Length: 290
Image (tube, rainbow, N blue to C red; front, side, top):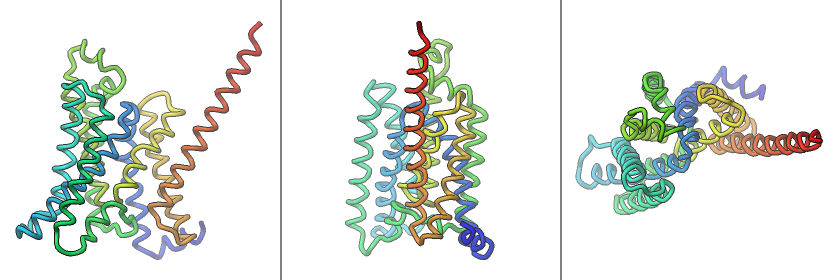
């Protein structure tokens, strides 16, 4: 661990990676708390994988049809927002289970992406890097993009915190009070989609899914309010990224995978410890009853 912090003072790429982890923690902690509260964690995986279809289509049009101004990130944004809109519309209007719609979009997005990639000449290493990401390759432009995302997320949540809260925890009550549930639910899904697509281009699909779900899930176990869950999730995500970077540097392991393992192990330990404590409390309460 000491070697990592010594290297941190010397190497710019480590400083950028650490800052990227901190910036990603803000958006992931806030948006992930809503996703976990609404119980649509599977949604993050669907949108994150569906962006491959948009990336593949944009890259295909750029290379084959000669549209150099069209970049994969443009296709990713369109695919992410379209996926969020379809999930929201079907779940609200057609009364279908969100899990079913999310699973279909996940599969279709991946399939469309693979088809376009296979039909595009050359080896599309750039697109493949979006799947797995490399936080050690983050540059200044990526950091500014993530900072802009954080500003957007924080401002949106400050404006609509109570409305998002009502939509996530008591949708029927919100309808009775005259709240436009459909609008705010779709706005929340679009905010989630933008968070995913911007972070996917920086740290990859797998790490985005992990940072959006695991820290918020851990924080939700010991936080009684959504606001506290957000702050705890931001802190936990920052801890996971820092610890993962340090361990990966020390052991010469892939940084993204190490970060995910740190988060996953923590979640399992906390879940088991919470279960044991609850059982002990139940047993203690049963013994005290006459």
